[in-house]
Amino acid sequence: MGPYRRVVTHSHRDPWLGHPPKHGTLLPSDMAYPCLRALSLVLLIGNALAVVYWQADSITGPEFFDAFSFKDIADPTHGRVNYVDYETARSQNLTYASANHFVLRADFKHVLSAEGPRRNSVRLQSHKQYTTGVTIFNVRHMPEGCGTWPALRTKGDDLSNQSVIDIMEGVNDQGPNQVTLHTSAGCTMPESRLQTGMSTGNNCNAGCGVRMADPRSYGPSFNNNGGGWFAMERTSSFIKVWFWSRRASDIPLGVRKGALAVDTSDWGTPTSYFPNDSCPIETKFGPHNILISLTFCGDWAGNVYGSSGCPSSCVDFVNQNPSAFTDAYFDIGWLKIYE
Image 1 (cartoon, helix red, strand yellow):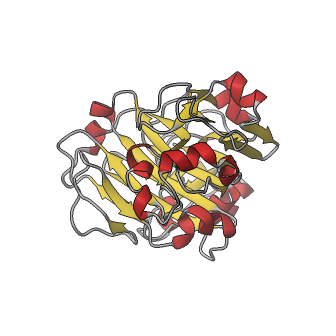
Image 2 (image 1 turned 45 degrees about the vertical axis):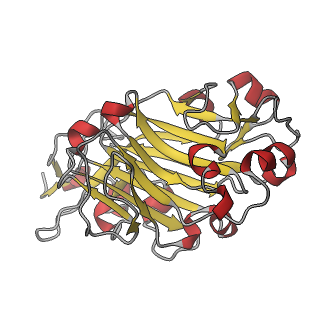
């Protein structure tokens, strides 16, 4: 056989061979795949080794209906929303899909009475749970409008022990995006750390947030620039989040193409960085489901509504102005999970 090359992977999946290679497996060069070389997955450059994750799940278009369940529950954040089941969402066209689009939206047709039902919307939760790895959302459009509170997050079964990671979240069109960890007591973040965003709090029991620097990361600015990609890397020692606008010039090729493997070592400084210096990430964060949701008003959007430049009160506006929510929808190109 010819010379060997070292396959440096952070996880253990080989989508071509159908079984997991061991970390650091040596392969003869005549077994290397052209696509591997094209993606630079087989690397040994001096002492710098790539950190590569292999695609475990790829969800696009109608596949969201198989990968997620509709959670018709009372809103945990006390919003002016009625989360509907699958049948209602489909019959009212609140969720629909094509080959590479998945749309999730709220009702934008009905005026509501103060005493009547709340505005119909959708809350999705993945069937599968995930721990360490990389999660990438390719989002073309996010909900916008006064009173809206959209979110892309991961969450454990038990908040007190398994925590929440808000990857994309905001209210009332007030950008940029904010990334936040919510944990039980005993998790804090250092004042200074390597990230491009600005910390808004370091006690994760109260919510340790990081506001992104890029105004295109949330709301109308996000939508007007064609959306973008949100990516999270979770390990036992840190959690990092990145954002790339659709029109950015530094989008990693693996992210833009949704490649079979991604190398986080060439993604640059994250927008948000949460190290385990004073937070036992491995024990605070258990198996997580992925959540996609859109609520109105509630504990955050409602509480800051008066300072957001929005008219009337939050509840009255949501009740009386259905046409204001014509653009209150997600259009997701794909979701990919790497391990």
